Length: 572
Image 1 (cartoon, rainbow, N blue to C red):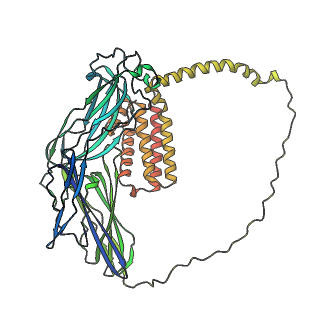
Image 2: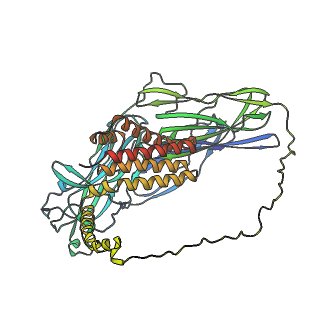
């Protein structure tokens, strides 16, 4: 819906959608303005977004959507939709055709339900409307797999969905369940935001797997080094596996204490405001920038309402968003721009907007706000033709041609003595024996790196962390502060995961505390790690607040933490 003043325009009326299910809806508002010759023209656009799921295959027509305003009726054109049979999504593939070899004793008669399955794990069973629920899918196998693919994805009816992680390849980690070793790979991690109350079910995720039926007595991870042309790869049979249905109890937001300005924002948010000029003139446009950042469903946040100010004319300009879904919580920021035109000279105060939200962690309503901004408005107008003309400086000749470089003289003294008397001559004879022992030690070391995954990750942890820190320094030198924080976070998470032979995906602050406590790391050091990771998370949600100084300080702190942990996390 587009026009000049849409404050009182009602929401469009949808036609009958018998062949579709409405999964959810949201809206967003954008404004634009032109300032020319002292006159302003503006326009607004409200976008209503509806998520629809067809109930059957075929050709369907969505009739015209109507909207009424000031006695006039507006209509859209009908929309024709062709619904076809869905195709199975292909999940990430491993580096080789054979993902996993069977364990000893696995054959065609094995009960595959105990040897191959997919799990859906939710981080909470009860949540408020709009509160994030994270579901993680993992593949568990003790048998050889020649191919895996998605058969059916859940529809997530009653939820707003945001994909946080989708594996590009199957990255197996070892996990013990009831005394059995499994190769486990994370498949997907999805953030769900409930839109309706009551018990909501998450349908199973279904996969098709081609299982190798010829068993070989090999270890769990030996398949990574197998020849994909081995004839034992040719005998497979297809099986379907499904995750279990998950039920979420969705609670309504409490009525007690709900602010009048509340617009269904759920999460943790903060608001900052800035003005492009501290000194201006009457009728000179100013740009007020308001940044709303935090953790929650950023896409559905509505713009904060700017208070009415008698000393300024107000015009909404534009908004943009940045969503970060790489960690365990969805977050980011939205930037709103407002054009303010002073009408009275003197010292004026710009009132910044307040933003109410519901914090599910404290189960209470909160108000995010920023301090007012004071500016000085002058009544006199400057001459628009007056410009700044930079002055030229004279060119001074400092040198002529290239100065002659005098080479150093080298004294060639007498090098007397016999060859067999030289110490290096005796050392040279001992080198073959030392080389033999060195080769034996090196072969033993490389053999362990190849077969002991935990040992290999433990040895490479420090080197990978240093590599991430170098990337962070490169980003810092290029003033890409958000990228630098990302590499700092990667270094900490990857280092702790490698030292403990844990999967990086799904690793959160509570697990990190437990892992470091197992190494008997001091509480002060653990708190430093948590503080550093929290700072990295907040940097991704509000990158506009970063500076070169605090980014450099965080990088130096993280390097000291990794160095200290490397000294303490030593295997006995």
